[in-house]
Amino acid sequence: MNEENDVAVVLGTRPEIIKLAGVIRNLGPRASILYTGQHRDDELFESFFRTFKLPQPQLLLTGISGSHRSVQISRATYQLADHFRRTRPRVVVVQGDTNSTLAGAQAANYCGIPVLHVEAGLRSNDRTMPEEINRRLVSVLADVHCAATPWNAANLVSEGIPLYAVRVTGNTIVEATCESLPGAEESQEVLRKYDLHEDEYILATIHRPENTDDPDRLAEILDALAEAPIPVVLPVHPRTAGSARTFGLSDQLSRVRSVPPLDYSTFLALASRARLLISDSGGIQEECTILKKPLVVVRRNTERPEAIAAGFAVRVSHRREISEEIDHILAKSELTRALINRPCPFGDGKASERITEIALAMAEGAPLPPSDRFNEFSYSIEPHGGQGGAAGRALLRSPVQ
Ligand code: UD1
Ligand code: UDP
Image 1: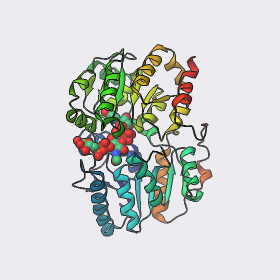
Image 2: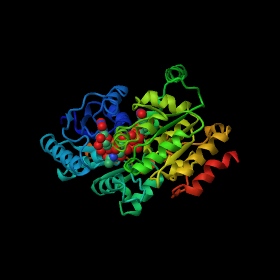
Image 3: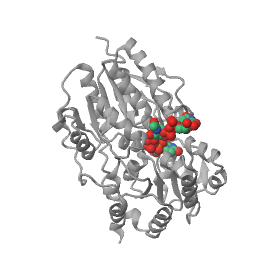
Image 4: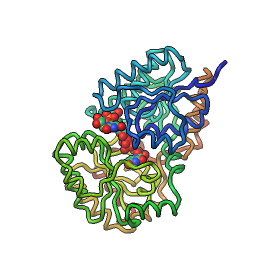
């Protein structure tokens, strides 16, 4: 039996590379990397392959990046299915909720190949989010669901996914972050390069359509950032850069310290030394609990209530709330210390190992590792942690009031 390349790993964006790097590395020659090219810029793609020392993709799709959602998904599904029909991997691994994730799951399912979904069961219940639709569709297509947290697993089970197909593994972001976080000297070097002082700046990212596709919304967020009392570093996602150009908001962008998207180690160095994070990113809602940094989530809702329930994050939406929360957190100098001992609700750094074991079992047609094998890994979060708002704010504030 030729076991090389029998586990196809489909990915196409920055966060998927970060979160699947450990699984790909563990799989070794069993993995074949199929990259959709949804993110094609070096800053979002090759830079991350280099950071994680990943081999070149075996398949790199064309005509995906920058096109409409329907085109991305249909073209990628078509090309991937064509590849699967020829190569017949034994299992296909997809991660998260992007258009690439959905294309990978559809192509595999239509070719009769079992699908393993990593980071399954997140729910914002916001049907206007492309990611919410993608993740729900992937849950229908997937055969095995690796939930990062018990809350994610509970969502899946409540939708009728059988318990035997769900495993709580933790989120692979924990090991990715721990592995890539630079040491003290290197981090100081990064601060010097950007002319920043530890604890005296804010690191922000904004890229969600709800914040970038409407000119008034993007303008009010940029205004709130520009008016913060300490410098704000803003690595600008290409979607946000495009919107700022189209809406004539380049002046607003220049009122903060805008920089191009950063490589992962540089980003983590800055995040770990910042006084405060502000973001609408999914991954940063997880990383703040690993780096023990307060985070203001600029979103209407979130599929990751765990960071709020654990007291690291507060979710706000309106411009006034963003400014108020910045002022509130900056006034609490003891907050950083208060967060240091809070446990991370997203895992213990072994998610990639567990997911690799599950993928190999699927590839070999063997039974999945029993759920109780992962019992040592447990969390103490409230199920249904809620959407933040007043409750989330109370938690973030509680240790220092
Ligand atoms: C995608 C994911 C989102 C994820 C984000 C990670 C979906 C529906 N969205 O959003 O869940 O949080 O990636 O960053 O899959 N662009 C470039 N160069 C690139 C990539 C994109 O210039 O390499 C620009 C293009 O103008 C493009 C726009 O960014 O139209 C948006 O890119 P797209 O891949 O459609 O979605 P993201 O906003 O990146
Ligand atoms: N990130 C990075 N450089 C940046 C901005 C973000 O390396 O300039 C990392 C960040 O640490 C996180 C991931 O990119 O791990 C999140 O990606 P993004 O916000 O694009 O996607 P999401 O997580 O929202 O899907």
